[in-house]
Every structure is written in structure tokens, then in C-alpha cells.
Image (cartoon, rainbow, N blue to C red; front, side, top):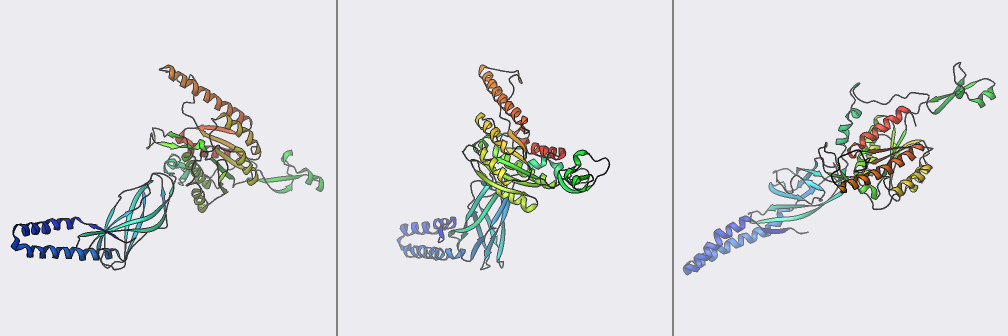
Length: 453
């Protein structure tokens, strides 16, 4: 797009200072008309030449942005905008990037002076994203004054930069600070594995004191003497977080009054994504493999369990663009997928909502496909108001009484779901909105200590 020129305030000032007085003088004193016309014409010629030279002021100036910019939601960050000045002539420049609405810049417009003799200049662009996701920065507006300052030259320069806004893990990591410290005895270290283990290692001769359940009877029969099985503890275990991204996860709830963002609304999916990544960091500290499954009415994301920094980046890249879809969750689809893809015994942590009776019944039926092979935990946000009827005796009106009765019925339904799942060996937990990350890590550490895997 060619440069656009607009009048500057200096042009208006000199029009008022030269054109108007000389025009008025020529009208009042006709004798001075030739002089007035000459002065006005000279000023007009200077302004015209200045307008012709104005577009050249941006020639040789280009803007360069990093191809990928990584930020965290609600955390101040930024990037460096680099300006190339091929002419190496000093000039004042104003820049205005075309910010996405989800990114809050510290300044919409930025002024800088390109140093004389320098081909490259750098300009910091601080900003704070308000929503996770993937956004494009496709243009930057440039503005500079003409040689005489009568005009302002503006031009839109296309750029190509991708802004990746990741979940903010800082708040949850503060709650679990001991897990991520490595300061002698103060930090939480890999859990020591107690017991006999589950993985077969080798056969050896019988030693007095070995239990009957440790004897390999077929090998003993072949060799004619007692042979004992030796097992080893399986150290690297697989942990999967199964995230429900259906319509249930789009429900929003306020954060606790004890947090810095108290009262702000946050969707269940936002908490699921953050808690899953925090659990991934915990699994990394414990030396286990971590993986992800996200589903709606189909499988949306799948990251096989691995470890390492690059794998955590892959998990983060898989989740930062995950959005809720207004569809019902298909538990049969995800359970069938897990049964087919995950051959090795793993810890499966479901993040979903079972306060819908029909969906709860579907989950109880479909989880039968995987509950015998894997350790299954189910977590959901505690619905607001779902409490026993007489937990709070203060009732101010009949409407409030009916609300309490409805909350009691909802609590009773979830209690029945919990009992049914417990009979099937599945732990069901309702968490406070801001306590999900701590709850998941606590469950994970408890499973490791009990060696249920």
C-alpha cells in the first residue's frame, strides 16, 4: 500500500501565520497584492515540494518481528521490535502495531528516534495477554514527518508474527512451591518405592523365607527343585490426564476471594488445562511419563506419555489452543480410544463433570472398558450450592429454602455417583475451583506411595 500523507499541525500554523495575514493585507491594500501573492505562492510551493518528498521519508525503513512470540496469560511480557534503517539517517518515527483485542499493550503507539549511522534499532513492546490461544500480528503502522514538517507520512507495513499465549502456571506453582524446589531436605523429591514391585525381572534358586506366592511352579517342576520369581519396582510410570472439552467445560465460576483475581470468572476448561500442565511438571520431578487426552464428541488431542523438557513443550503446545465445543461428551469414544491405544497400565485422571444424570450414567457404563486395566480417578468442580440441606441453618426466605432443596438434591445425586464409582474401584473427587492443581498432585503422589500402578 502506498504511503498516505496528512497535514501536520505545523502546516496549519504556518497557514495561519502567512497565508491569512498576506491575503487580508492584499484585500485591504491593493498595492501590496503582488507581494502578498508572491509570499503565498512561495509558501504554497514549499508545501507542495515538501508533500512530494514526504513519501520518501519511509523509504528504506522496514520492521521485523520475531516469527513466534510466547507469552503467558495475565502475565506481563513482550517482545522486541527491530527497525532497519538502510539510509542510516536520523529521524523520528512513530509505530503502532495492529494488536489483537486479546493482547493489552502498555502503549498503543510508540515513539522512537532512529540514531544516525545505525542501520538497526530495537524497540521493546511490553504487553499483557488476557486470554490464552494463538493470535496473529499482521501489520505495523509507521508514521514520520516530512523534511519541512508540513506533512505526516503514514504507511501500513505487513508483518508475520504468531503470538502464542500459554496458560499461567505461576499461581498454581506458588501453591505447590515445595514440589518444585530442590533445596536439600526442603524440596519434595522422587518418592521412594516400597514393596516387591510388579515387573518380572528373573528367576533364582529358592531361599528359605521366600513366600509360596513367589515360587514359579512350572520352572520348579521342570528343574526338580524350588525356583523363586524376582520382581523389580517399575520406576517410570505413565500418567495421563483426560480432559473433557465439551459443553460442560465451558461453564464459568468465580475464583475464590483469597486469590489475587478474586471474583473474576474462569471456565472449567481453563482450570483443567492449567492443572494438567502443573501435574505434568510434578510427574517430571518424580521421574514418570506424562501424557494427555482431550475429547469432546471425538478425540481432539492425544500426546503419548513421555518425559523431558521438549515433551512438556509439546503438551503445552497441544493444550494452549484447546477451546470448549458446544457438544455432548462421548465417554464411549474416549474409553474405547484409551483401551486401544494404551496397552501399558497407566494412571488415568479424568477432568469432567458428572452432575448431569444422563452423562453420569453413560460414564459409569463406558468406564467399564478400562477400569480393570488402568487406575482411574475422576475429578470435577464442586457445583455451587450443591450441599446437604441442613449444612447451613440460616435461611432468609422461601425462595432460598427452595434453592437449598435443589442444591441438596444435586449433592445427593453426586453422592450416589461417588458410591457407584467407588464400588468399581474408581476414586471420585469434587474440588474447589482454585484447588484443582493441588488436588491432582496430591492424588498422584498418593497413588505412587500406595503403588497402585
